[in-house]
Structure formats: C-alpha cells, structure tokens
Amino acid sequence: MHGPLPLGSGPRYVGGMAKRKRMVDTSVREEDIELGQSRTKARKERKDLQSRLEALAMRLAKTPPHIVAGLDLGVEAEREIAQLASQKKGSALARQRKRVGGVLRTMDLDEIEAALEAKNR
Image 1 (cartoon, one colour):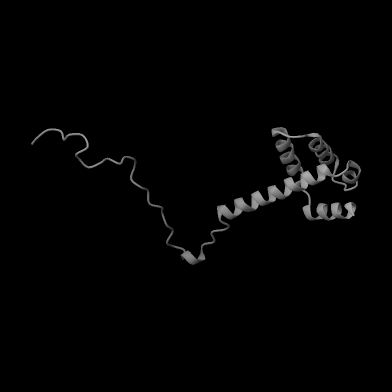
Image 2 (cartoon, helix red, strand yellow):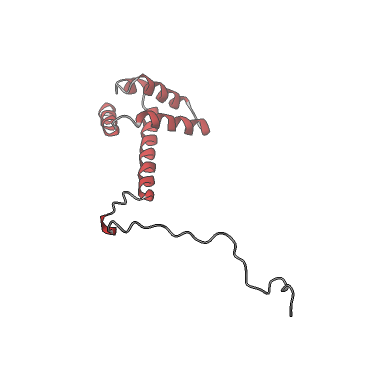
C-alpha cells in the first residue's frame, strides 16, 4: 500500500517547537542561590497594602473636614480626600479612592491611623 495515509490514521502532529531546556549554572551550589521573595507573596503584600490604603482613604473621607485638616496631611492629600468625600458611587469613586491611596502611600499609615483615633475620641 503506497500513497498517502487516510486522515486520522497516522501519528498525531502536536505542533509547536521543542520544549526549551533551562540553562542551569552549575558553578554555584543550589543551596547558595538566593531566590528572593516569591511573586505570589510579593503580589499579596502589594494587594494588602492597597486594601489598607483604600480603607484608610474611605475612613478619612467619612471624617469631618476640620478633623482631616488637623491631621496635617498636606494640601494635596486634603484636596483629594475632599474630592473623594463628594463622590457617591460608580467608577469615579473607585478611581478617586485609588488616587487618595496613592497620595497616602508615601506617608506613615500607622501615624495617620493613630492621629485619627486620637482625634475621634
């Protein structure tokens, strides 16, 4: 029987390139290699920080303006918090919450939370 084989009767072609093998540096022992933090753990920490920032932003937005002014957060932060307080719902609220979180990221969160607790008492 010569000629082409009927469709589906031969070995299946999987396609693609051969799998590349990762080059391993054998000059250094595996135990001595510092891998650093896993990407999953680093991502989780970034998400946790962002959640904390956004929660603090919402808490500051619900706080009366004269108390926020007494926290000495700076003109930009106070302006962004006032803008957040004026938002009611929707995607603009989420954007503004992230914006305030970005402004607060450079500040000491523990200090802000402690000052806010002291002012609310």
